[in-house]
Image 1 (cartoon, one colour):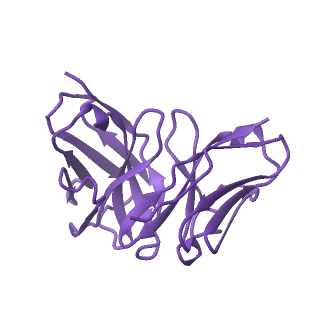
Image 2 (image 1 turned 90 degrees about the vertical axis):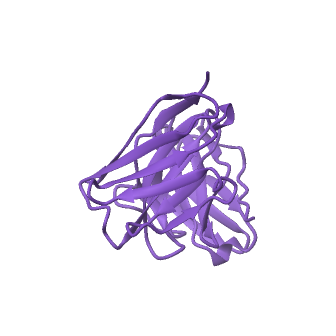
Length: 122
Length: 106
C-alpha cells in the first residue's frame, strides 16, 4: 500500500524559508505513471494547490505562488521536497503531499499524506 | 484564471439523496474529481474523471458532468458522509480546487 509522509518544522519565523519533505513508501517515485504534488489548507479554509513535480524534475506551480516556491525530487531517497520562501502568517496552514494519477492534465490526487501543520510566528 | 464555484453548505436528511454542485465555465469539457475530507483528516478521493469510483468507495457515491455544472450525488446519505467535499479540475497545466461544500446529514 502506497504511503506518503510529510516531515519538517512545525514552526517557522516570519520571512524565513519553509522546507518540507515528503517520503514515499510502498512504491517508486520514479514511476513514469505519476506526478507528485503539494497542497495546503489554511485553518478553517479550503484546499489550495501549490505545485507538482515529475520524477525527471519537471515542475508546475500555482502562478500566484511560483515566485516563492521550489519543488524538487530526490529519486535515490524516494522523496520530493517543498521550499517556500518569505513566509508570513498568511502561510500558516496544513501542508499535504499527494500522488497524481491519470492521463496528462486530467490527473487526480489518489493518495495523500496525513498533512503537517506549519505555523508562522515569531 | 479558471474558477470553480461550490455552495458553502448542503443539508440532507438521513437516508435521502444529497447533491453537491461544482460550477465552472464549460466544466463539461474537463474531467472533474471529487474529494471528501472529514475533520482532522486528509482528503480522500471519492470520484475521479467525472464519474468513476476508486476501489473502496461505496456505490452510493456517483458523479456527473455536463455544460457548466458537475454534480456529486450521494444516495442514501449516512451520518458518516458528513464532511467537506471539494471538486477539482485541471486548467492549462494548473490544478484548480473548488471552495468546498460542507455536507450536513440531519
